[in-house]
Image 1: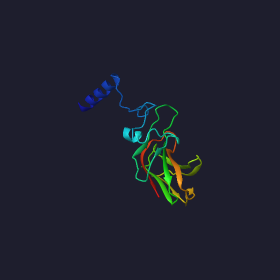
Image 2: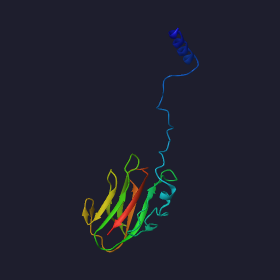
Image 3: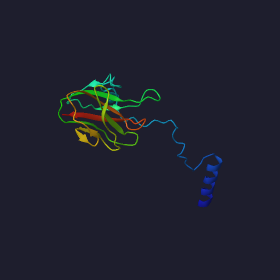
Image 4: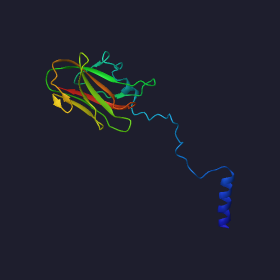
Length: 167
């Protein structure tokens, strides 16, 4: 009796078009976006600051939180620029974030004339530039304005971060 019912159930699943095989390869559309890891307020912090000319002026008390967010148009990327004034003392420029797949960020430092002074491009949490320092190489900063850039470590990377400039 039991075997007859199992056979009948199996036959009725086959004939009704049901499948007991799961296909996970086609579960997501090819253009599915990753979950949002940032808030609108984090995306908007300091905006517009998408280039060195529009860099947000900061002091040592500014820390964010901010975010590198998905670009509104295909092919574009979000970059955040901040301007600070070096005092001529040793300086540490840092971004703190939690590294994850699709969330690596990098840090660059530019002099006021646009010359890159140093960059930090690791693959773990946080990026730090110490001036003067050797890893990454950075000279002693002379007194005056500098611009730091926070950017995706790889194309399309997005993440939240906080930053600090300590002198």
